[in-house]
Length: 353
Image (cartoon, rainbow, N blue to C red; front, side, top):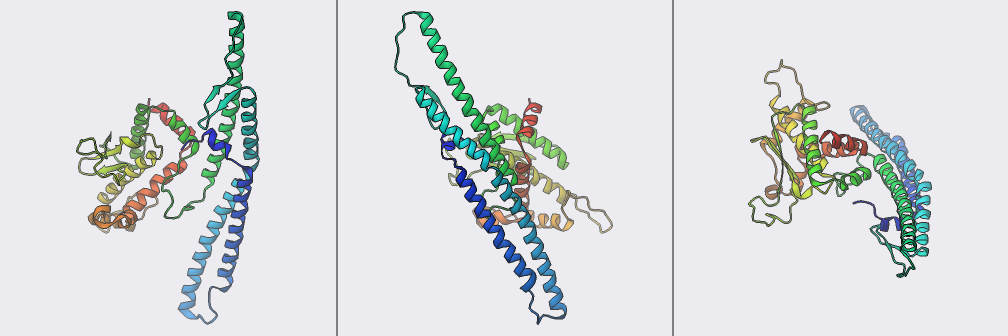
């Protein structure tokens, strides 16, 4: 969702400071928990193999806690670093609203500026034109100040989203989070431009994955029978990969949502998973050549998963959501969005023209 003028009216630096304080309290609690694990986790009575196993598990847990602490500490510093900017935004919004009212302009929550001054009569055309030019300049000055405040707000949101630690959301949180600056850019694009960008990203990602000979189709996935009614109103069909006809499909009903770019990367990953399974060595002496960072054992688990693929209709949402190929594709889609900034989108937009 784009940031509106109405949103900015509710921004308070005190809220950012409070969030920073809460994060610091969490960091302190986690530091104490880590110290307790380091000092007290292994009973003195443990000996032999039991102690060796316990020490190994302790070391792994402490390492995980250290990683989380580093990410959380960096995130807290970024949040606290926005206090001054949010203070400036808060003051700017109040000043703009005050000046607008004094100059007889109204600003609605969407940021639309309207002249609400009472009608005037003029002795001649020159006087009328001078008045209109003056009002226009006042309006443009207000809009320029509003734009500057919104620019600062997007920079704040982008900094916080970019500093978000990996795995910072619970299982109930969103799978895909988009940079606010990307969201802002996406909102300015036509559907034709969005289609071109989606196709370009799919081709770019597929090329990097070694996937070729496929087609991208952007169509209505919610109404497969074409009767004008969603086949299943409770389901949001964002995209799919079909190995049989080698078609990557993206739902045209989600073109206005920039997180659909994560779906594109997600579906290309399914194509890459299929290729990795097909490329598994047949004989023990053959070398394994899978996706970077993916072990042969993981690809073999994908093979088993594709042979027994779970669907939400037949097996329930959790079974579908948590199966290996979906968890991996979701991580790939989320990682793509995490790395995508406005400069990347502008480059892709230019290349896709």
